[in-house]
Image 1: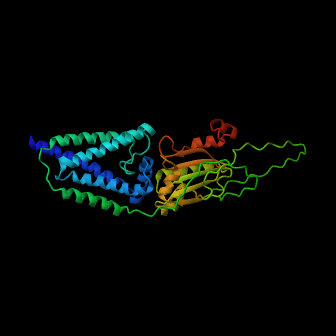
Image 2: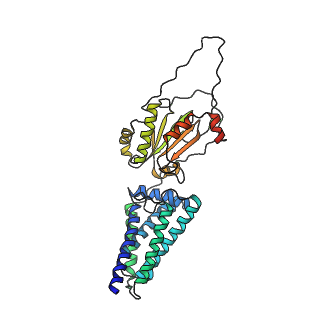
Length: 365
């Protein structure tokens, strides 16, 4: 009987230990700085952490996860301290995820396993509740007085784990700030507009039609939204003039490449589509030529650092991001790979809509 209990106990220890160790390692995937920076922006900033505190807290938390995973496999203070501490951490995670689900809904990646294994908040809550149940059962299986007394083992593993994370993902100097202002109405520009730098799929220049009949009626110019400031003119000088498409892509992201290919196909079928510009995250930037080769076209682009990129794309948003602007006004924003993901059919539909049609659904125009 005791042998069976011991076998079950070891099975539970290995299982929960594996979950914690994988969770810590996953937060360093696909590269430590990218993964941890993404975790900070998406998980810690919304909780109120400042960038200065987040860089230390994120690495310390991942180090603690790693340490608890390792310490579950040894016997020093296991029953009296390690298991209760692990349960407490999971309960904190459950509380935070429950709050996020209540406020924002069950969408997006909770970040428990980083980008390696995306999970929704509800999936993560279920996983954590099961882990708590297994640990409580493990606590009952372990005999009283089974703890070894060496506290130095705990502190050594803990500090070594935290130090290891700081070494794998050293804190880097703050990236240059990049802020995007909210669209603000500005006076209509009556001056001539500079021509947008063309991409590799050039739109045909419309030829002016001359009416030879002297009494011909002068057609009224179509209505357009008032000029606004998108906040991207420092990257793309003419983006607030006329219709434009702005994309947020990560060079190595398969979903981003798929969206770029769709946009290229649309432009081939309709060369009069608005000019397209790209903001790339500075992660695997060497893959940009390969990205454009797969997309089937080369577009004007800028590269910005990881944290400013996530701040720019918007709270709770994810790549690929595709925005349609008209005179600096944000008309439509597609993002991520779930409900709000880019849809070529929707873009075709919204491009056909007149100013009056758009104003019915967006009075701010």
